[in-house]
Length: 239
Ligand code: ADP
Ligand code: MG
Image 1 (tube, rainbow, N blue to C red):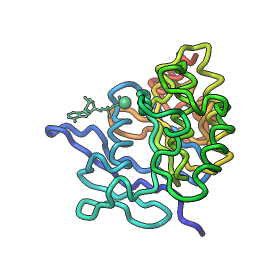
Image 2: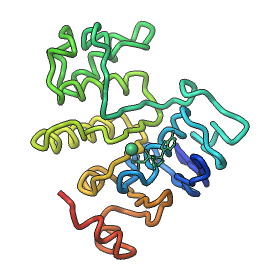
Image 3: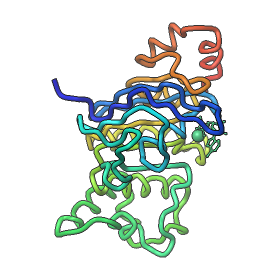
Image 4: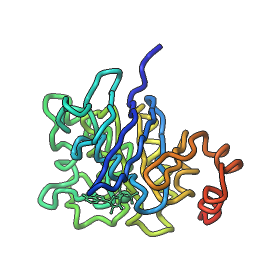
């Protein structure tokens, strides 16, 4: 059997003696969206940063396509992990056009085709020569998605990527983003505190609380059969 694209095993992280990530394990397959869902402060971003390689775990391992990328002594640097990142503050390079933002970090003959193809996928082709400050928040987010996908990352890590956008736009962007990610076959680990977002985007939800994964499964299974009262309450303010 093929190993999962991303395998997180027994990750523990403490800050000042307080355990903020407590024995977290999960896997993500190619073309799959796994969502780390939980209230603010439960340890989602810390987990993501450990996978990205910008934070080091206390114990546990991470494998990508079956290869070890880090344990407590061995560590592949962030840029060597085949990972793309998308955060709420997308921070496009303000002095570069949309096209150059997406092309940034690409080399070789095919980069022009790749940029064109991605801008087409996110519906931003006509903005190729514009600068980021001329775009709306939603448009900037689309460009950020294209830029993150340009080097064909094996894994996309997304931390509350849509929370800066207004409600009206958000559902559309979620759907479009999902279409693009699926068409690229990327494995996605999405972090959010919004159950509605997880229900809409995830193939698998890992419900997190106080550093631990308390329940894991298909969105509707978790929604229909929350494990305890706290899980049920968390899902009740779905929007
Ligand atoms: P979430 O993304 O789920 O909101 P975080 O992973 O950002 O949660 O944070 C989990 C907990 O760890 C929080 O209590 C936060 O204050 C704490 N924390 C995060 N980063 C640090 C740090 N660098 N130093 C100390 N505490 C931290
Ligand atoms: Mg966070």
